[in-house]
Image (cartoon, rainbow, N blue to C red; front, side, top):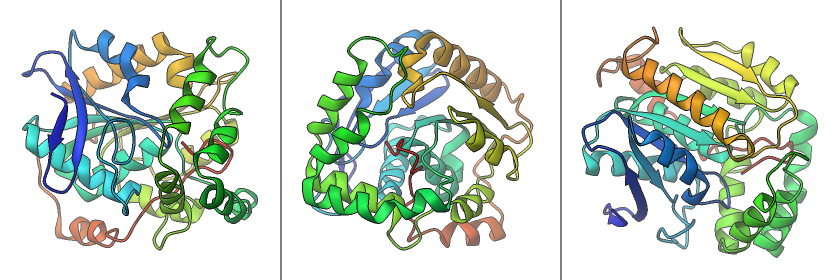
Length: 302
């Protein structure tokens, strides 16, 4: 599996593990690509059918002139899942990828069994939101160069040697217009959900159980206070940078394995067993049609 023509977009996607195993979807963030999930995918392939796409505009996937936003990315993944016929997935996302998998769960509920959200790019408070226009102006003017400087600050002192350089390089390889469009889609486009009140609204529409991990204690406290589907939980990992899945590979892999095993066994009480959706939920989900979703403005909006 490499470049798949889904009609709406051509996505690069790799897979590991048995085709008949429970499906696990690993989604990267802003200015990244699927390579960051390589150690996790290999370790999890003994038990799961692991799908690792490059989002539109990123990595080896097609780069449209327009529409490089999380909502479009979520719809791309729905088309990918349908094309592959893998059934429901446990959807794992990092940063902007969290927004993508949450929108996938909201807009296409039959495709997602549960969500793992790693350092989400949502829940920005007022002071953070105030910084967004200036940042967006920089990304529109300087593109990936400005974003790479931003990414460089997202690591802890414990980050493995070379990780920072790898992400700077990947960001610099992302087309400038994709960097700006994705950021605008996360923050400023109509229906964006990055600001805290809007984040709370869209999180209430997610019907699947979720496991959320934050590297900021106040953000974790905030999300614990939002309505949660039964079976959900929020964790806080201190002394860890934004790319927690790469700074803590073994811990993240164990987290994903344990959660996904519970999800596929039906041990999470909020899990949806099939594609059924109530009329009320369908109406609420369709109201998200213009959503572009938004990022956490604490300097971790990948």
